[in-house]
Image (cartoon, rainbow over all chains, first blue to last red; front, top):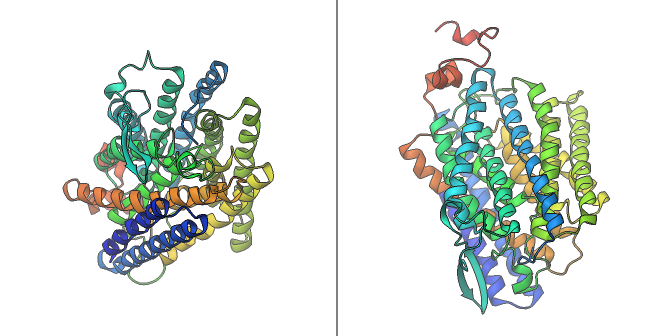
Length: 59
Length: 429
């Protein structure tokens, strides 16, 4: 689960890169970048949940 | 932070003098790391700080600086996308060749980056203290100094694609990171998170039933004195960074230095108030973390905001710090003895955002967001998976017996305080 979350995070980064390359309009660009940030937040949340679910296994 | 223009020789002389003070930040953070750890691992922790800084400086000067592109030597690895140049990595000379004949500005760039990498590698060490061995710690420092830090330094400072967002895409002045909030603190904090995730918590920290066990630092005096030392180093970093990366005039430097102090003071004041309200008494180590959080946030903002905004930035960082410590420990099962994840990664991210919020340039906030997504979406997964691979062959964590007797005895054969400290749980060995 942690791996899955961490693998989602680059997708958010690529969305922000796509925003820079594809759009010239500041509003569209900002919206796309914010989507990238949201995807990264989702990935980080899943990774943190994955860490918490493993807590009881080793310690 | 758009591509470099020449800086006058008198300002470069000032930058050189400032860079002589920057290592005090490294000394302060090392002292804080030791104080926040346990007494049975104090010598190992301080030796680790010194060894990691030494390895990082050596490897960065010899190898990493080529990728960072600190010294002139080639055009860099440039990708052309959408008709714009994206400078992804530098192509400077190996082994700092040609340093003596390089322009003074390039020489100082290398000096700044060397002090910065020494500070960056101490952050994951502080988070992994009391359970991570010296050799894995050195391997972590080597990886940061050779790969991660040079790449981040090239992207964020000088002519990298993030620094050039202003020139290429009209986003303000490009990604603003004059004092190293992203390149030093967020990068080091994310490395700290990776180490904590991989190494796991200290033994007994999170029992299977009940709340987490409190493991307070062993010497609040080290921690608080370390905070005072860091102030000098931070002022040097922020002022030298403003000169080298933003080409700030001399008249802008006193405000950058004042903003650094104001941000730290507001951070400490806010944490003092929060801990006094929550616990009835101020907590010394959390107050130190609040001070540090203010300093870290100022790394992004000191050169670009007003004094009032600097106070606000420090206040937010100081309020968030004790709450983050509780969140990490009680809710997220993250055992971070030095608090580097909250203090350096989160406060650094806040500072970077604040630099965009308080900027009057069009597109600056977006430039800061793009920089933040690069840190979280590129560097965090990369660092985590590389560290995970290293951990397979060189386990980060010492064995259970070593952790129980303390890393001083286990790794060095002698304690930091041999004459007057006896641990109850060692006496029955």
